[in-house]
Picture 1: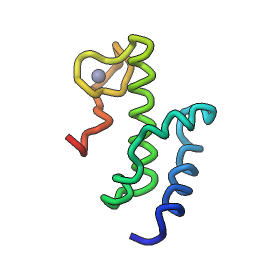
Picture 2: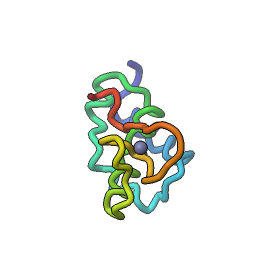
Picture 3: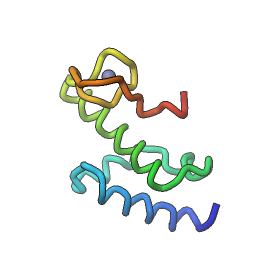
Amino acid sequence: MAGSYDEWMKEVRAAFGSLDMPMADWHEIGAFDYRSEYDSGVKPNDAALKANRQWWQEWNQSLQQDCRKTRGCWLPRGHQGQCERFSESKA
Ligand SMILES: [Zn+2]
């Protein structure tokens, strides 16, 4: 793995710019465990995607609109297609 954790985080933040998520909510993503993603060699883009999905799952949950078909599915209730769990790789 090239680069330091700081550089890695910079790339993660950059990746957030291309995701469908209001930047004002960036700080709430701080609950995500970036360090362990970095330690396991996850690419910045993948870590950003994962954090984004976790954020959406928590957001949907707070609105009581989270998908109940699969535990950990980050898509909103009544979504089309298959369920997608944000923590797939950790399970
Ligand atoms: Zn689902």
